[in-house]
Image (tube, rainbow, N blue to C red; front, top):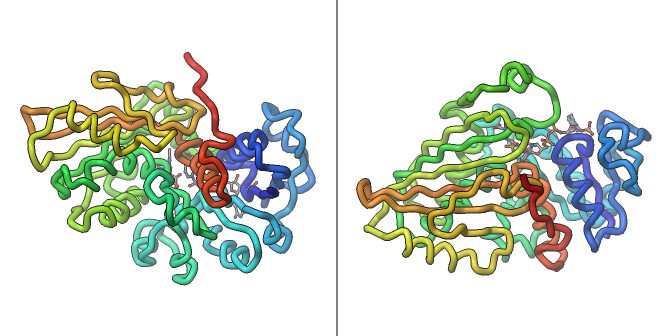
Amino acid sequence: MNVGIVGSTGYGGVELHRLLSNHPAIDGCILYSSSLKGESYAEQYPHLTGLTNDRVREIQIDEMKELDAVFLAVPAGISKEMTPQLLDGKAKVIDLSGDLRLQDPKEYEDWYKGGAADPSVLKEAVYGLTECNQGAIKEADLIANPGCFPTASLLALAPLIQNKLIKPDSIIIDAKTGLSGAGRKPSLSGHFSETQENLRIYKVHEHQHTPEIEQQLKKWDAETGPITFSTHLIPMTRGIMATVYCDLQKEKTTGELHEEYRRFYSGSPFVRIRPIGQYPGTKEVFGTNFCDIAIKTDSRTGRVTIVSVIDNLIKGAAGQAVQNMNLLFGLEETAGLHYYPIYP
Ligand SMILES: NC(=O)C1=CN([C@@H]2O[C@H](COP(=O)(O)OP(=O)(O)OC[C@H]3O[C@@H](n4cnc5c(N)ncnc54)[C@H](OP(=O)(O)O)[C@@H]3O)[C@@H](O)[C@H]2O)C=CC1
Ligand SMILES: CC(=O)N[C@@H](CCC(=O)OP(=O)(O)O)C(=O)O
């Protein structure tokens, strides 16, 4: 297969390049960039010195249309313009941005503060939460790859909400992220002096991933009420931890819910349900496509706490995009993603 990466010099793009270069089904991976042309990729990212395809190309829609797949690793606002042109051709499109995830254009306009994609494009976009939408992903031409926080949060909630085990208006998600979630472009809020030895909450009640999480939860249980969703910046490079709290419909033991999670994810090679009493840290999924989950009920409050960790750049972006590509092309779901974390 021959594939292309648009936005190849960003953090999502560089992880896609690294993963696709080690993928058994990929013959060629073309690196497109809006800011560089003809330059050496290794000058941008010396850690990838030696990878065969080293030259960055100018974006060429007509050429991209003839590839098998194109990954759009660009900021929100760009792919909604590029996708309709690409869909004319042969290539399947996997969009890593938030442009095509919200089915209701009004929701996009409210939360992303820009015009939504054309409704016909939105209609074609399949939400790529791989573990929970395999049938539709296999048939798709266009994938809206989920956001990083929605991936960690929805995988934590799916077994409970799909089995109606929790009160659907009681969900609180308290999430923490490393700085690479904000991309490569420098900003004041990502400055070393502002972030080191510091902990901040941001986008309080305004995070653009709120409607994305609610949209999926409502598909699973139409009764789902608005969620409370908080995001915090942690002075580390990679990783997301989503700690989720909700009220149980009926009393359940940790053992019962743990068994439910194990059953639910028994066919999912990248979701690891931790043994009872063991709670995952972000370092235990670093550089991998795993989502590690732990669960515990609290008989005092009638609530349950779920902890879910991912690497935002892998399972939260490039890794899940490759996992979706594998399904689109009938490949082994795990192809090119056989990584365990570096530890410590
Ligand atoms: N970082 C993360 O953890 C996650 C990111 N995402 C999403 O994935 C996408 C990429 O994120 P990330 O790689 O972190 O972001 P970066 O800011 O690191 O990279 C984005 C890249 O997009 C390209 N780009 C910027 N402006 C334009 C433009 N006007 N036209 C065409 N290309 C442009 C640039 O690459 P070039 O100069 O080569 O064109 C830039 O490096 C975003 O939509 C992001 O929200 C999703 C999940 C997690
Ligand atoms: C640390 C940080 O700023 N993280 C970003 C991650 C979101 C993201 O990647 O945006 P998409 O919706 O386009 O996927 C944020 O919280 O907005």
